Length: 294
Image 1 (cartoon, rainbow, N blue to C red):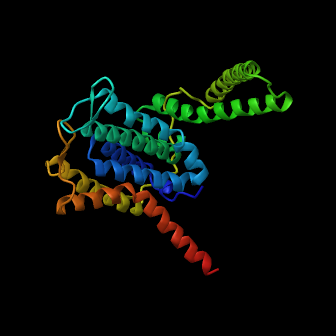
Image 2: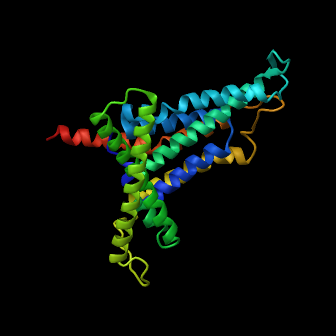
Image 3: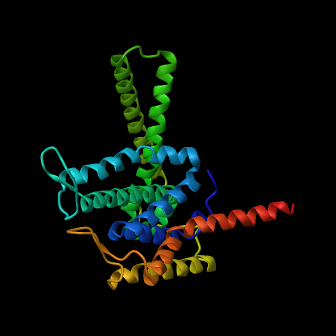
């Protein structure tokens, strides 16, 4: 796992990037855009989590995406280009196959970007961005994001302790251990909620007229990165809004993949999706250069 320089930017810059990346991924169905988004998200997640963490995060995703891509042409028979016929005489069309691949790519890219967002966005950033606008909701979200990994870690710790004391010999004992560990974890969670409530009350939660302290300051580098992000986003989205990058899957594949406008849009979108990774690599290069002078 590497130290992420992009996480050190202002939370508004982080939020703007992930809104742009997720919004373009879910709204634009162009196949090249989906490929760029998925590749950019995977590259950034690999940098954030390392190879082991990346495989753990994405490993479960591959069979789900393959299933999505396969199931669509099995049940959706629209399209004019028939590839073959199923035993029940329903056609499998190239358009349905491509749409299934596109849907799987959109789902995979969205999940990967959400994983990146969950790594970059801490509870402090969420409270800073939304604490004054929707304080109760922002506190709830931050506490939930903090509670879920703690619940998971405690459950795994209980399971490891049980297996160290007695290794289950059959499926029934495994199930009994799992239920016992889950019950103990739920009890621990209830105790922690009482402790959190007492802690919040002792610190004045709910009292009106409280002030807010923030460690975040919007600096020149934040303005520069935000400006670059806006320009890249405009360059990637305007061709779609003007109809120059339209793409349809039904009744037949229709759209332009290569051309001056398309290539420029691909470069802008690729730059936008890889902006955090480029910032991280640039910071790593600066750090290595400074360390070599010591």
